[in-house]
Image (cartoon, rainbow, N blue to C red; front, side, top):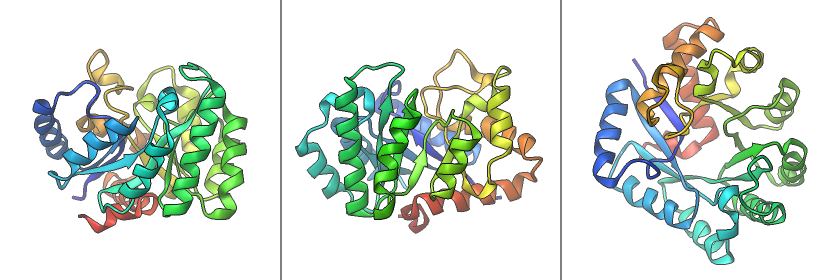
Length: 261
């Protein structure tokens, strides 16, 4: 029957280490066979790697979130370069620019983003990009690294179809999540329907962005199924064929997932 891959979750924000086994078990029971635990800072990345070392379902993206970019240091960068050698570390990030919240100064966000793009190019790992209210500024950074092979995913994508086409043409993937299930997300669903199916991955962003069915709870990878079912409606796709295509896409975006270590 195949399985789904949650390409972006944060399992230490709401869930304690004692709860983690249950989260993973529920995900597997729901048909989510692999999950990428995305680091938001150095300590979070280390926690993710420790958990992934003890689970065949967990993988890690090593990075510093734009909200926490004041925590980015050269030492953190060197550690991420070291971690890139681990078979469990499949990407660099979550990094990027968030000019909506501005929890970190914009120049600090920019320098941390550029530094992590540099690491992604050096290590050959894909980059996980967070971009909110910073479309042009984000692309200016990305464009500067394309000739060096920068590739990856635009996490929690919420820009227009023209931006999406620019990204996919450059070799990036577009990540969709529980937002496509919201009744008011009409424009997002219309945009998603125009995307090339071979360039889409799905994610929960757990514990955030709950699908409509589970609003007022903490999100977790098991709930990825609701987003998947909405996508079968959007693309008018056979569920088994769509599931297989999404697996192929996820492993294309994050090649280390295919190794299954």
